[in-house]
Structure formats: structure tokens, C-alpha cells
Image (cartoon, rainbow, N blue to C red; front, side):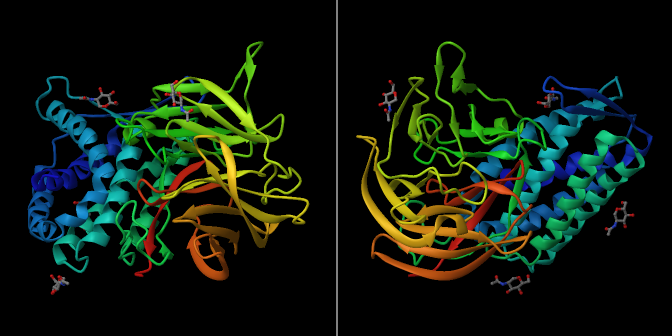
Length: 460
Ligand SMILES: *[C@@H]1O[C@H](CO)[C@@H](O)[C@H](O)[C@H]1NC(C)=O
Ligand SMILES: *[C@@H]1O[C@H](CO)[C@@H](O)[C@H](O)[C@H]1NC(C)=O
Ligand SMILES: *[C@@H]1O[C@H](CO)[C@@H](O)[C@H](O)[C@H]1NC(C)=O
Ligand SMILES: *[C@@H]1O[C@H](CO)[C@@H](O)[C@H](O)[C@H]1NC(C)=O
């Protein structure tokens, strides 16, 4: 990643906030979009671009670049953020040019895009805080400036429109989280992608909230999102999303990259139900996407299912003894799929084990459960579970803001243990939590929001 580019990226989103200074005299238009969501555009009046402050940020950024050079080897993990910011950068540059030179002195600022930029910037700031020496005065000054921009955005409050209220709350949350970034020092994983040369999870970073779901619906709380856990060549940046207001799994949408996900521009939606033709619907939302296959809990009969999104075909296999009686905290969560560095897994409970969690390794070629481990943890005491390097991690809820990994089962050593690795929740309710070995992140679908976590591993 080019150093200059990184510096430019640092400048870009702030540039967009600068243009908000004259918000007070702008006008706001609300309308209803194609999915019934509120769409809000702001038309800003004639405004001279605040070049002096832009310049200050530029100077600060170039001082930062020296330190960035020192840390450049850590920047790889920022790749997604940078790609997304690069797209918004060219867009912003174009908008700034229009602002500076246009005979038509109006600039149309899309609220949606602004929210994306804020979120992306927040993620970048969090990551940069971790990878750079955060006590650097240059960074602190840039950080102060970012916070000032957020407060300018807060002036939105003067627009007492119901559809702006949601956005304002988002900004308040953002500001709170930016403040928290200050003491969030080491969010980056310390093991190479794909490597298991670590001693398991040391701790989990702060939740990074990407966006409300693509339906922009607070009611779509049953769902999941993430990336393919073993992407086919050329699909490394593909994201997926599926959600509903109930636990039924009826469709999944794919996005060519993170930016498209955030912009809600899917390239393909796979329907699991087409009237008179087929009904492949699932339930429970604890699915996994792997090599462009969706692995999920089939609704009828109760079985594990695989929908090949390349060939648009589906098949199911009944797992002997797996019971639909034992769910996680919320209903229908009987089969939980997981993927890690060593392959594909499924957890469930059986009547024979009296509801204790059974862990199965799935052979992806034969689509059969080929090896089983019996744990001593009751499935109904677990909120969710995921796998990393052959180790099962089970979570439970501590309070509305805190979740805890309380149990692990290591299939490499056939050892189980009770542990306490607490982590912060963005909101209380969640149905989906899975690890992705391709980027070492935990993905959570948290009360309708896309949330992810970086994982810090123990040194072995
Ligand atoms: C910026 O992006 C928005 C949303 O994709 C688009 O509508 C707009 O035309 C773009 N502006 C420029 C100047 O490229
Ligand atoms: C971090 O930055 C401060 C202030 O610029 C400097 O004094 C300190 O030596 C730096 N620490 C490291 C580990 O680079
Ligand atoms: C924020 O920006 C305004 C306008 O430029 C300035 O007057 C104010 O001092 C700034 N506040 C901080 C904390 O930098
Ligand atoms: C999915 O379908 C494609 C295209 O027919 C095929 O090449 C691939 O092997 C299938 N994958 C699985 C896991 O069945």
C-alpha cells in the first residue's frame, strides 16, 4: 500500500465533514426508498471550501506519514478499510471539485454515504490507533480534529425530523466509540492468517459496528453476515448477508466487496424458496459460507443442508441423533455451523447426551459428519459457539453489554476447560457469531447490525 495513498485517505473523509460546517443554512429532503426505508438528502448552499483547515489536516497527516513508514508492515490488515476509503476518496475528490469550481453552487450530499464514511473512518482510526504509536502528538491532533467534525455533525439536531433522529443517535454512538478508541491499543491479531501457531484467544477487541442491515430495518434481527470462510479464487472480497424478522432463512445476498455491502448493492440474491418449484428454506441463522456454499440448518426435514450458490442446487443430510429439542437461547438454533483453519464443523445436542453439546467435523467432499466429540456443556446454557484452530469456544451472556467466552473444547488435545474471556457487545441481542479464518475476525449479527471483532491471540 502506497504511503502517500494512506495519507490521502486520512484526509479524505475529514474533507467531507468540513463541508458540513454550513449545514445550518442547508435544506433537508426526506423520501421513502424502494425498500420502504427513509432516504434523506441534504442540499448544501453556496459555501467556500475551508481550505485552511484542510491544509492543517494535510500537514498533520504528512507528519504522521513518518510514523506510518515505521509501522507500514502492520498496514496489511487495513487493506479492506483502505479499499473502501479509496472508493470514497475518488468520489469525495470529485465532489470537492464540483464544490470549488461548479457554476451550479449546490452540492448534493448523500446522508447514506456520509454515514458510511464515518463508520469507515471510525474503523480506520481504531486500527491506526493500534498500529501507530498513539501517544504521538500528531496523531492526537488529527484525532481532536476528527472529534470536532463529529460535533459539527451533531448540529443535525436542529433538524427536528423523525428520519434524522436515527442518524443522530448513530453519530452519538460513533462519538462515544471514538473516545473509547483512545485506550484501545492493540486490536490487531498477532498470528499470521491461516497459522495456528498461537495459544488460542487472549482477548477480543472492541465491537466495530459497520452498518445497520441492508434492509435498513431494525426489525430484521434474525440473520447473519460475513465473508466466505474459504473463498474461491477471485472472490476473496465477497461478503454475504441474510436476515429476516423471524428465524426462517429464505434468502442470501452476496456483495462483490465491503463497499458494495455497505452501499447495499448486492450482485446476487439466492432465493431458498420459489413457489411450486422448490423449498430449501432453513432456520436458526447459524450458517456458514464456504467455497460459495451456504451450510445451514434445513427446516424440513430437520437436517444439515448445503446450497451450492455456484450451481444453485441444494442437498441435505440428516445427522443421526441430532435433536431439534435443544436450542441456544433463541428458538430454532439447533445446528450451528462453524469454519476454522482446519475445516468445517457443526455443533448440536442429542437426547442421548441429555442436551449436552456434541461437536462434529464435516467432511466437505462427502458432506458427512465424520468425527464426533462429546462435550460436557449444556447447549441451552450457551448463547453461541465458534471454532478457531480446532478449538471450540462457547459464549454466554453476562449482562446487556457484556458477553463472555466461558468454555473451550480443544479437539487437538481432547481437553475442555472453563475460562473467562469477556467482550463487549454493541447491543444485547444477537443470534449469529462466527469466526472467519480468512481474516481472523469474529462476525456478529447484533440486533440487526453488522458488527465484527478483531481477535488477539496468546503467544504460544
Ligand atoms: C458519489 O457517489 C454517489 C453514490 O454512489 C453517486 O451518486 C455520486 O454520483 C458520486 N459523485 C461523484 C461526483 O462521483
Ligand atoms: C511514541 O511517541 C512518543 C512521542 O512522539 C515517543 O517519545 C516514544 O518514544 C514513541 N514510542 C515508540 C515505542 O515509538
Ligand atoms: C472546532 O472547530 C471550530 C471551528 O473551526 C473551532 O472554533 C473550535 O475551537 C474547534 N474545537 C476544537 C476542540 O478543536
Ligand atoms: C458447486 O457447484 C459447482 C458448479 O457446478 C461445482 O464446480 C462445485 O464443485 C460445487 N461445490 C460443491 C461443494 O459441491
